[in-house]
Amino acid sequence: MSADTADIDRFEPIEGVTIPDPSAYVVLDVDRGHDTLGVRPDDALVTLTAAARSPLTVDEGIALITQFPQALEKNHCFQLLGLALR
Image 1 (cartoon, one colour):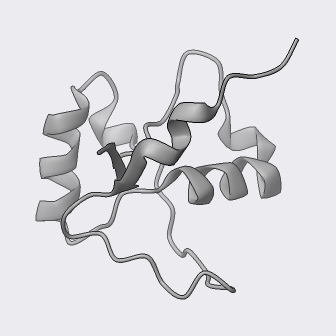
Image 2 (cartoon, helix red, strand yellow):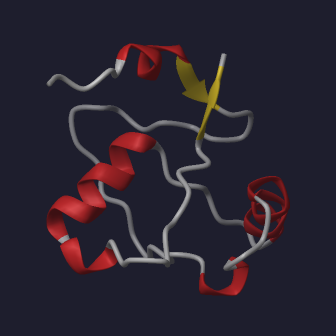
């Protein structure tokens, strides 16, 4: 069985999210969103931007759980709001 990932190419950064040079960059002070647990994604995004924070992209989220697998917790997911379907 193969994964159907064709739609991932249809996502692009949302307004206000700047992707650094893709060769290498560091994401600091990642917060999984304890304060926005159970909050709709659109409302959580308002909270993030009001706090001058940037939402994670899919690549950043994959990197996070690759380096810190404990960040992926059952019944306590995190959204990757930095990209939207174009």
